[in-house]
Amino acid sequence: MRPILILLIIIALNGCQKPAKTLPPAQHSRELVVVTHNGPNTYYVNGNNEFAGLEYDLVKLFAKDLGEDVKVKFLIVDTITQVIPTLLKGKAHLAAADLSITHLRQHLVRFAPPYETVQQQVIYNKEQRSAPKTLANLLGASLTVPAGTSYAERLADVAQQFPKLRWQEVRHAGSDELLEQVAENMLDFTIADSNLVAVLQNYYPNLEVGMAFGEPEKIAWAFPKTGDPWLYDKAEKFFERIEKDGTLRNLLDRYYGHSERLNTMDVTTFLEKSRNLLPKYLSLFKQAQELTGLDWRLLAAISYQESHWDTFNTSPTNVRGLMMLTEDTADRLGVTDRLDPKQSIIAGARYVLTMKDLIPARIPEPDRTWLALAAYNIGYAHVEDARVLAQRLKLNPDAWADLKKTLPLLNKTEYYSTLKYGYASGGAPVVFVESVRTYQNILEKYEPRHKSVLPSFNLAWLGPRANPVP
Image (cartoon, rainbow, N blue to C red):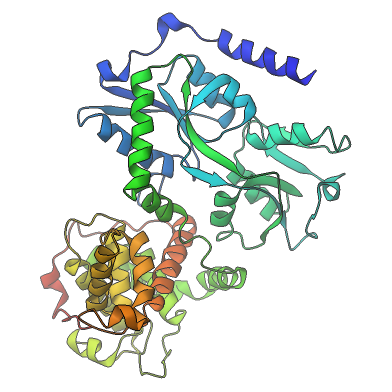
């Protein structure tokens, strides 16, 4: 019965197509229409009220490859179940929707070269139940997945081996919503891709991976089988290029590279202190944003990583205060009391701004900020050494994803002996930056953006600027 059912689905979906009303080729119209859905892996509005998402960024880069005059139109559907039918109806040129390549979908569409590999995982709330080790542990439990997903397709396959396995498919909730419901004990189990799970665990530390479900899957864009061969050929060459030149690696790092840096206890403690301790300093972080233009949530994340928001924190090397300023840096910034929260936060923000000002102007965000954070931690000179080393190793000196590889090499004689500023504990800034990135993402989820009163900022307002040293 199953092959017949698949055939009926294919016929029904293809029957929805009306070739006479399909879009004109993007090559001629100079407009690329892309169907996707809202989600943390696809297309969303981030904490700065800007469009973001791995699929969003990939599509925008692809459009540039097609020509500077090509415009992108995103067609947003409610759920993933609507993505392929919308594509087959001729309403979009391609689907960029975090689609796994499955046997059923390959009957319907033509996939571009895959750009990511994910593992389906069974997820549970570790505060409420024990880990499922086999599918037999799911019998009689509340297992829910989004309809039309590769999870539902795989469950249908394994049901032949586990006829008593039951699950619910919901049409109006994505994987991120179901993961939240598991965290809130509204569901027993769900299945989700490993990349999304790693991100959501930073918001819900009670989410836990019970077991892998099946073999890893590839993620790719989908095209109509009868679509424009010119556009598909361009997509093939696009993915070949961005994989070869490191662009794809950098994008994957931007969204997922930091997601597994913190453990459950780190996240739990941070969420608790965000509720109990952060309000005490909130106005000061926002004031620092007013003065520097740096998002207060970034500054709060830096401060937490430095001191855990303990204004009296002092290291064995006499680095002190909420932003853990050295005595020399504090003197250069005109700070009279490093333990004064206001002086520490504003001076720390100014120092981050000074580091950003030193980063070459050609380096775009967010890498510019991440390199500045590394310089804040280890000194700008050592970051420059890491960039020189990246060039020698044929890596991208302007990409944080590659600097993460070269910074830890600064403590190895064979490398630091050939560089201008010598030895450095290069692993520390990598841990620092990746942790700050995660803490900032958590704050962006739970704390609203602060709209600065001042429309712009001027470094002259901030008093004496620090002279960076290695």
